[in-house]
Amino acid sequence: MRERPGDNQEQEKYYSGKACKHTFKSQIIILPDARDIVDVIAGEPGPKSDINLFRENRDKFEPKQKFKGDLGYQGEGLIDTPKKKPKNGKLTIDQKEENKEFSSKRVFVEHRIRSVKISRVVQERFRLNSKKYEQVILTICGLVRLRIRALILPSEIHPISSD
Image: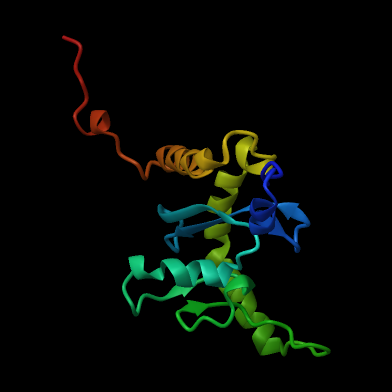
């Protein structure tokens, strides 16, 4: 969530009707076993959908690279998603089992996303200059990578001895 912009055009750009707020959109791509954060996109206007955000930024990856995502990415051929319940229908027992297996493999990714979202800056209204949002989110992701030991600092490679 962000502060309400003063300019009317800026308000329209960041207003998310779904959330009924002025928001930023972020996307984090994480390795399947959640060992590392691969890519972070932050500070996009709020009403942009997950799938459109992915499509705009997929040129950073191999063209045939496969991904796993939640139902927000349904319809993209490169992203495996769980089966969605049909309107006025039910999932079959096999489909429910597939979804359960899918979720059990993806739970580690959700835990890593949680480790980014528990930061108070991400949870509450962003009151700093909106141009700094991406920088703040990237810093939080860097701290998470440091905490999970995915980020190796030069001093960790060659420890400084105090002789």
